[in-house]
Amino acid sequence: MTSAISMVGLIKRYGGKVVLDGMDLEVPPGTVCALLGPNGAGKTTAVRVMATLVRPDGGRVEVAGIDVSRHPRVIRRRIGLIGQQPAVDDVLGARQNLVLFARLHHLDRRTARTRADELLAQVGLLGTGTTPVRDFSGGMRRRLDIAAGLVLAPEVLFLDEPTTGLDPAGRRDVWGSIRALVAGGTTVLLTTQYLEEAEQLADDVCVLDGGRVVAQGTPDELTSAIGGDRLELVVADPERAAEAARLAERVAGPAPRSTSAGGGERVVVPVARRQGVVGAVVRALDEAGIDVDDVVLRPTTLDEAYLRITGRDAERTEVPA
Image 1 (tube, rainbow, N blue to C red):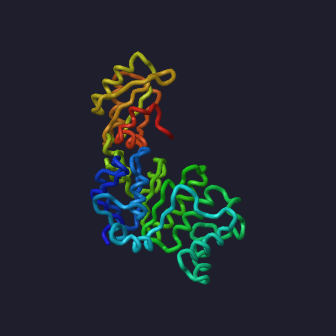
Image 2: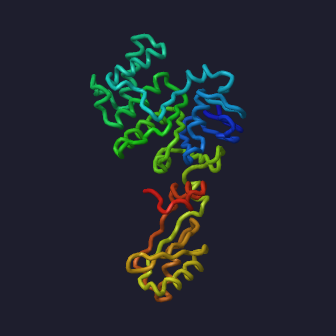
Image 3: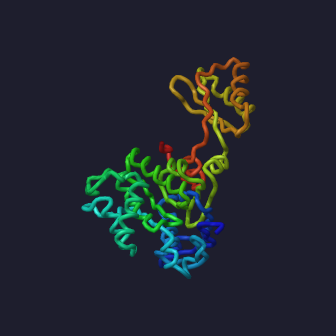
């Protein structure tokens, strides 16, 4: 199996509306692929097709080397799916929940209990005893959700926005569980609204917009594709900001832009990822007698790349932290 997920020209319609319009995707085994896109881009629909919950209207989709249209029952024995809503029972404890899920998957009682203990250890919940799930934190509950999706030791795990609504500590807990799964050989495809999550977890990022893949690559590749780093200068004398901008442009290449920054003037210069540009700009300003209060080389973030790729940067006045 060269690809854990292989998708060529996927089409899905609901009535007269085309939700997926020729989507292509390849995910190597043992990696994490983050599927990003604005609301309505088709992320959840794509996951539902790959998980055999809905049938495609066109194209070819294979998961774990098996065609989803021809052999959906075989695929269901090889995948796990964790949706946006919790699937566990609030009244039962963690172990009781996992034994129940294992029994629903037709494991015998002894095997179900053994598997439940293995999964509790895997997601860091072994010491929860009979504490009802309703008393769990959001991160603990989500880790239990993930454990429930691993009962059959899936080759491919689908996570649909796994950390929505969690606090930072809960998100880190879930990230740790996902990393452990991948280290054990599981392929993970996750949809997320958090760009930081994709940067933290994903080997590959796929940006979906209008039912098509509009960009794909590692986080570094996507940020490099939109122009690399930017150099930010705070010029002490606002009246010399225009002159500083011209010098920076001459040294760094692209046209700078200028904004006010407290007592000075901030000049932002997009630069290529090339060595020595900071020193060259600072020397040029020093030779011209232009005082600079601050010089920072900032990398382009995945947030910025995403907004530029999808064209949403014009609709946003602030990039989320």
